[in-house]
Amino acid sequence: MGAGKSRLGKRLAKRMNFTFLDADKEIEKENQATVEELFATLGESGFRALERKWLEDLDTENAIVALGGGTPCFNNNMDLILEKGKSIYLQLEPKTLVDRLQNAKGIRPLIEPIKNDKEALLSFVEQKLIEREQFYKKANFTTKAMSLSAKRLDSLIEVIERL
Image (cartoon, rainbow, N blue to C red; front, side):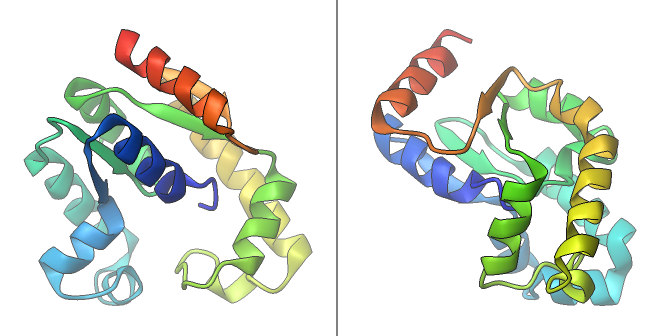
């Protein structure tokens, strides 16, 4: 959450002349409900099952896909992600993620109750990173995502094309 997956994904897709897909938005369209509503009615495990099904059905040909931060961590999704395409881990410091999350416009179900409590949010983000790092590190490529300049974006595209 807050790493800039959608923003970078759109930029990469445009530069590579690929389609951009945001997994959460696609799942919302398919289910005619927001992620927040899906979490509320199905719980996290129900949402993760929808996410897995969406990944299984996904055609990744000429597409850049922004996945939710938890996607690689459930239902052996990371293995499926690596089978279907190339994966990039956008790495950021917890404090930077907290700043971004507190300033974000949309609702994020996992952090909504603590969004305005910086200390609690930082603790949550640090804990999630500890839990999820093992999955994120399986990505084909890891990059510091603080600020990706056009030059660095071009370098990233070159690396992706070589993978």
